[in-house]
Length: 191
Length: 191
DNA sequence: TAGGATTTGTACTGAACGGTACATAACCTG
DNA sequence: CAGGTTATGTACCGTTCAGTACAAATCCTA
Image (cartoon, rainbow over all chains, first blue to last red; front, side):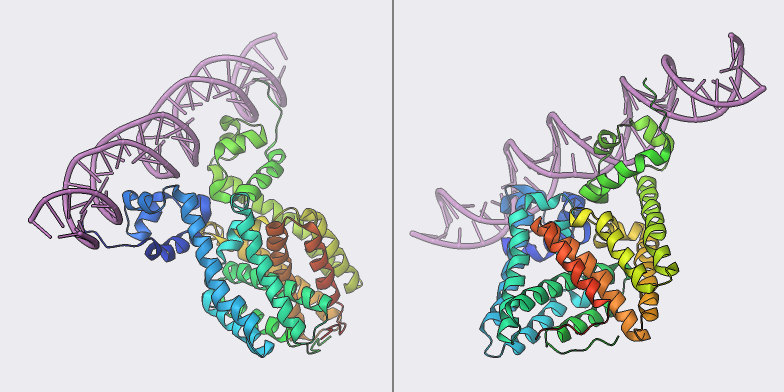
């Protein structure tokens, strides 16, 4: 009994990666024990409600990360452009340049959504709301700010799907660049 | 033994809906028998290779639908604007105004992708390629056509994620309208 | 209408599933 | 260093899983 002096928080990254790769239904306990290095005993010690509580903890962790690394800078930057810049950098980092999928997006698509409806909704709602506010500070009118924010958040999700479909992180990076440009309010259509 | 004179093709819509709702891993045979109304005997008679073959059949069916209802009109319309218009109408119809998710997108996100990598890749590649060609006919230069096509396909996928996250098909419809406008090559940023 | 080819329901298999029980070992505090 | 708390490994539970076997019912063709 090696006793890895593990804390609950230590396993969350491994849990997150497992759910990302297999989805909620596809992430079996045996896979989870393999990835976390913890036996069932420890797992159920930290998460008495099993997989559901593990996924909940991961969602909380993701929400916290975005709050700290995306939403807060977006809200509190003196220069809204700098906040938006920061957001795109954080997003690229978080999603490993498109090689990593969005766990919340994954959960949103199948019936896993029903288990975590409010967490999933909050994640996207907060993101869209905070980004829209930053765009307003940048001079977008209320409606354009709202629409562009929705387009950007959706565009990121869609780019993650395509990047993974093509196994091509360059696709993701290109999409990010174009979305970033759209937040700068420059006319750049080339029709 | 009621003998529903079933043909293989008859069950594909039910199969598709089951995979859409539960994902590949989450779609159990018992759920599939329930939704299709066919027992295991019939199911394995039509699809000797089980779930994998069922999913393959569904992917083929989706590919066929898009070929007929999206790609072909996009390629063969005299007026490329009409072809694009047709595409958006077909997409809204296919995805039930955003209440139905994209099966291929669902498969793309988790490890199901690895089983059907080429089908998933082809789906998005074909869509992007054909749309880019139509945009070129509309006067977009090669690069802008390619980029806009990628943005539109990704934008649709992302809008499906957000619409499902918020259980809000109006969100999807708004996104579609904006994406449609971007294919018209009009400068419309409101910064 | 006989007889082979299809289609179907049911019973079954072994493996894997999520989850529980619990004894044991390591840790921490006094 | 004693005693309680916190982790941990393992064995086990009942259930569900994907898939198989096969006989019976239906259809189709000659």
